[in-house]
Image 1 (cartoon, rainbow, N blue to C red):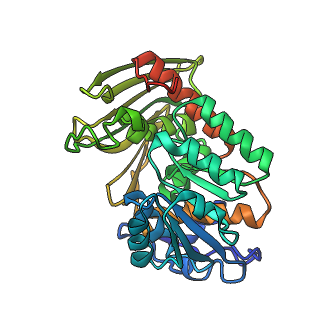
Image 2: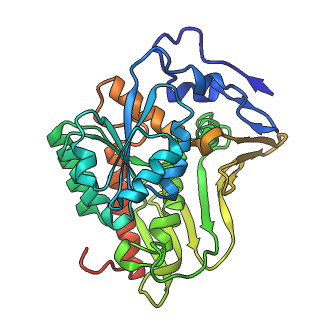
Length: 371
């Protein structure tokens, strides 16, 4: 077991993400035992006033992460339904609530907005926030297509306002530990990656997961995680091939994807609302294999099996389901005067959406009126 607190030389007042692995305890108990990360890490810097646009299940999860950080103020909630905004604000302790998004973004004291509306509304809501000079962290998928993503990024640059896609995996300790192991060179070159995410929600044609007008389908909802795995560890593929099955609403409910790379590497990706396959990723290398997985409670596990060596396993259950790490990055960037994150830069969001567009084209997935 290894337990290392933040380096004594860190005088910045916040924990750099590259220091994160040094600040957690890796053991078989599945717990992050260093509460210092959450309780004191930002005690010496400015507090930021956070707002929530579109309160719902995802916003509730993200807010529980925010509640672990001392340098945040739960400031305002905006919804098209005033009663819903009030209920969310009272449940989680926000100071203000509004019955429209326009009122929310017009609040002069609000500094950062988390957007968790359906995929089809991300472009509209992000542009609204940016034009009102509010820093934005918007849930994945960033938008419905590359044209919309490009418009969002261009607007952020024009307004000189921070913008980041809320991608959970790159900020998680297990993900970063996987990268660390690969960078040692011990596993050797990655030959093949296999990533998957599937579960069986009840079919509801109105639900955002199946409603094509809301960007429904397994690809943008959960398949995006498998695509993130491939891009993060292997880069943008030269070839994309995909096959999907569809529901009566026109949304796909299951998709298989193959990525090909010029150097012979390959990746196979799968997402589905028809099977209960769980969440995981296998990285097959020249000198061994890595496998990481997580449960719906965001507990994380990594197994490293290198040829001729004993297997190593790392596991943990982060407080706040790990969403606080995204918020830490946003505030670190604001503190440093950055307009984008080094962990999830605009270029990664561009590559991600470009790749998703290629997958949709290959599989025949169409969002009516948004192509």
